[in-house]
Image (cartoon, rainbow, N blue to C red; front, side):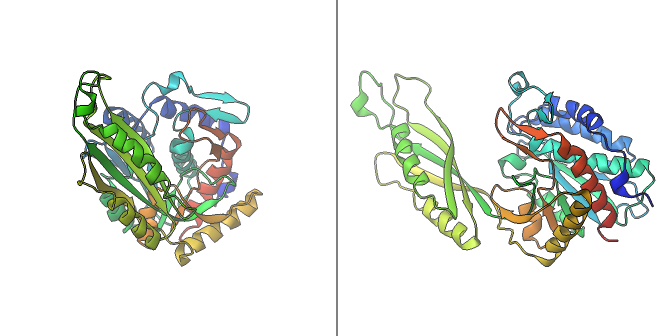
Length: 379
């Protein structure tokens, strides 16, 4: 059998394949754009001989693509490659952050989070098939459109699919030290609205009750609740249309991260306690989507990490394992107790910014890791 570590991976070839993925911008809130990305990846999967399914989007989100890779046991449970194709970068970001290589660095919106990892793990399947290597377990691929907003429309799809499989691979970007994620903190989202009383800001200012002013006071209060183990961040703020009008409505969104379920429950209680209709301006707090705590050190996941570390040793690199903040769809599969190895994708820096980039040498490194995982899981 061909050693998967000897497969002919080539960084230049991989970057050429990645370029159209990155230049097909796919922000979550633009389902038409996301679906263009799904068109692209569905075509590539079909070209590999996979049986592909297009699962229609809902809740205003784009479609998902599920692909069953060729295998004597295709359709049965085995390994699930789980990734998202949506990004946080709006269409047009390419003008500020074009796909560009500079030595060992390559830039592009969504390249680190997480199109680079998705491509690498798909390329590993491509090379294995070209070499005639049959993996011990069949592989199913599921790419989704809404991870960046908490996976409101595809959580049930992910959990249902994951339950059919023995192992879950989530090629989110590697941790800063290049390590994998073997557990994740809980993430809770909240939708806030203040409602006041409008008035003309110049003629009858005293008659108005500003929803903006009330929400502004809440920002410091909410972010002031942050501790090392439970954080709160108000990241979206929408209000006002006319500067000469006292704003009567203000909307905001808050993200909370907690290291344990107990801390999450406490954080949720503190947020919900901000509901207040006693004054001239009403504060309403509604709970949004939540990612459950994925407890670390589960035996199946630790066995996957041990295998990845064995492979890494053969590659001359080190892969650590740790819990992490920043939710992913691995929260769902890990919380279900299904062996899950997360953040095994490319190495890079500055995801979610206009300096998002990957380290080019991580492409071949991670492709070899992926190929070996496919060949050794279930062997």
